[in-house]
Structures are given as structure tokens and as C-alpha cells.
Image (tube, rainbow, N blue to C red; front, side, top):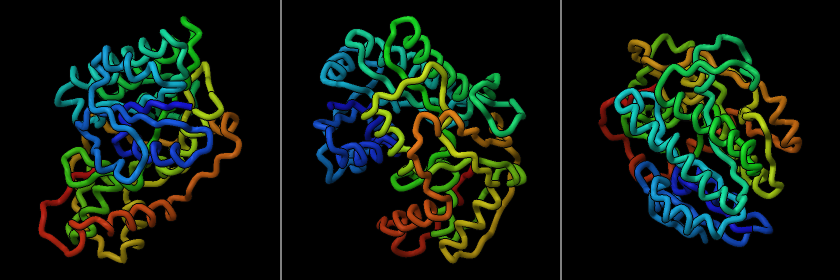
Length: 323
């Protein structure tokens, strides 16, 4: 099989590339990425072909997808706060970009697996979140990811395109960058602790998340590609765990054997209070999946951070913002 991964040089995409090249039956893996948030270094040492470019470039998409048996669509403009700053940019990449990917695939009937987000549930209070719930996005980012999955499912229905839309929850692990304003919570915490800086927590820290290790996500995606898994409804990709941000901080401090200093700041607009996945549909489609436990995943993530040159010795730096 020949596989194209949009956003393939990003955090999840590069982990998936590494997973796919290790699988029998995969002949070629192509990563299409504009490197706006990804990095060519994430693919170093692999046999993955990197094509630098945007999913908004229809001509480039058509050329790349013409070689593919399946496309895993991960390219996106991430971050709730970033979408509040520039809503249109999030829409253009996440919604319009998805339609362009689907159009390239529709011509050839190419299998499409696309990343949606747990953020689409928004203000719906019910836990755990199951796929039959209403969606009430709280941010332009969440709305754009709802558009992503809606277009994927619509193309599946209207054009009989084989599709699968997966709602990612809080994915974490190696290659997830820290040290920038939109860093996710796990790398932001790890970065701050390794620099012996206080953690900034927005809100009281009792907000909960369903954390999923990137290695587990990559294995599910690779399995979906190889078995050509499809679904007429969106599917949660998480396993029903529920951990508070404060608990996460304590767990990471234990792994790092680091002191824990916390600074609380006002809650951020667009943030969901609680998130937990119902995983029945996921386990029906992927009965052999075995998720990596949180403490094990955090330990693997810390080992990756400790191998980075910037953490060889403590360095003074402003606290990293945390969601």
C-alpha cells in the first residue's frame, strides 16, 4: 500500500509515519506538510518522503494523492486560543482544506481517515461523551473540526467514498513541542518542570481530560489503514479515562522527581470544563487495541524530553502557558 499523511511532519503525523514504515504491506509513506507547525526533523532517519506544501494547493494535492491507496488527513491549524485570535485562518485550513483533500480523494475513490476533535462536544455536560450526543462547539477551532468531520461523513454518504472520522481527545507523547504560546498541557508542564519553573494553570485545575498516548493513536490509525476501516458516524479515539489537570501535574512531578510549584490564572475562553470519551464504538471497530496507561506514557514522554539538548542543564525561562 502507498499511504499519504497530510500533516505528516507534525507531532501525530510523524509518529504515524514511523508506525506505518514498520508495518508489513506498506510500500511507500508520503508526508505532505507545509511545516508551519511540523518539522522535517521529526522524520529524520525514516524512509518517509516529505513533500513540502499546503493542503490548500489543489494541484499539489491531486499530484500527491494520485499515488495513494489511502490518505490519513491530520493537517490542521491547531489550538483553541489560536482560533480565537484568527478564526478565519482556522476555518480555511481545517474546513476548506479538508474539502480539498476530499476532492482529491473522490476522483479515485481513495480511502480517507481524518482527524476530528473532542472539542466538538463543547458545552454538552454529559459524561462520558458518546458519539450520539449533540455537538456545541465553544470556539472557532472546535467549529472548524466539526466541519472537518461533517464533510468527511458527507462525502462518504454522497459519493460512497470510504471514510473514517476519528475524534481525537488529548493526545500526548514524544515529538509534541513545548516552549511556545499554544503548547499543549503535557509538553508545557514537562518543559516548565524540567526548567524548574512554576506551572501556569488556567482555572482551578480541576478540569478533566481524557489523555491518549500518541503511540496508541498511531497504532489505531495504522490498523485503520491496513484493514480499510470505515464508519458512517464519527468515532471517539480515547479510552474513557478522566484525569484532572492538577492530578496530571502531580503525576509528572513524580515521574521527574521534581518540585511542584503552581500559579493559577483565570480560565481561558473556549476551554471545555470536562472531557471523557465513551469508547464502545472504538473497541467494536478496533477490538485488539491496548491503550498505553497514562503513567507509562508520561514516563516515555519524559524520556524523550530528557534526550533533547535544551534540557541538558536548567535554563531560566518564562513559565510556559498551560491549558
